[in-house]
Length: 323
Ligand code: ASP
Image 1: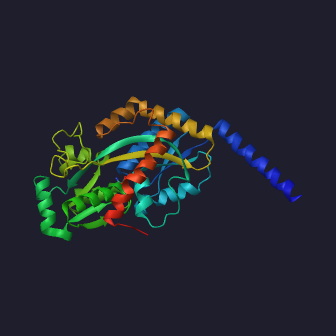
Image 2: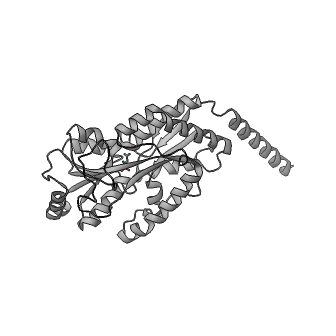
Image 3: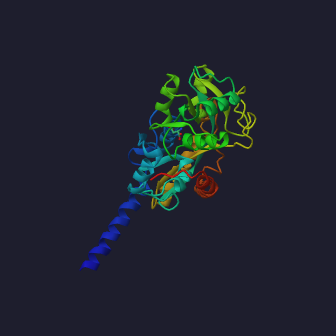
């Protein structure tokens, strides 16, 4: 009797997931963002969600689940029902936190289906409007002189702003006083208001403030300059030889999400990345969509694996860990 009941429950479960995959999507989809509203991950997520909604015929609703350096959101999505109605947009932090955190409630590689990569955003080093340094050399001199009295804003251990700060501090050979926020959206408010000295953040958050002269800017983190910030040197040019950091983003679904649902999400992502509106907004924010072949589960999984391997020894060498 018990065996029979279990078998019947199994058939029923199969039937339900099969049916939902077939008509998918029949209701709103939630796209979880691991940082506060108004920041760069949120901006990228909202742009892509809007375009994916048009393709999927259902609204992709953005939900910000901020906190713990961007690790709260994947913990929540890993436990969600794997039916394609809860998905996650995350960035390079999916790879770095695998080493940075001694304990995580999820495994980045085994608890998710990858949908595809989205964009590689450069970062830029910015400061409050009245920060005294004229160029990056003077930033280094200021940090060396003021040591840990220099305030550096980030979005918690695991955020891209944390990673950039860690690399900057190790290159300069000096620690700064780190101020963690729930995202670099709220952190930017304090940089603009002069409450915090420095930040390194995606151009998707900083470009308009740099162009409008609202913050000071000292360099971009990629090896090549950013098109619409042509006067801003790369950190490599500014003296930090070899500095090269771009923030890649990808979309995830909980492990076990049906294959045809994953395929629909991947197709909607690919359409979004060809959408002229998305391309135009990305360009204005100093970034561009990845190629269609990178907006696939295979390319995304390969990137996640290689980035975990790339950052593990560097983080271990820096000796920064969180619980
Ligand atoms: N840019 C942030 C980071 O440092 C997060 C955010 O999108 O607010 O990872």
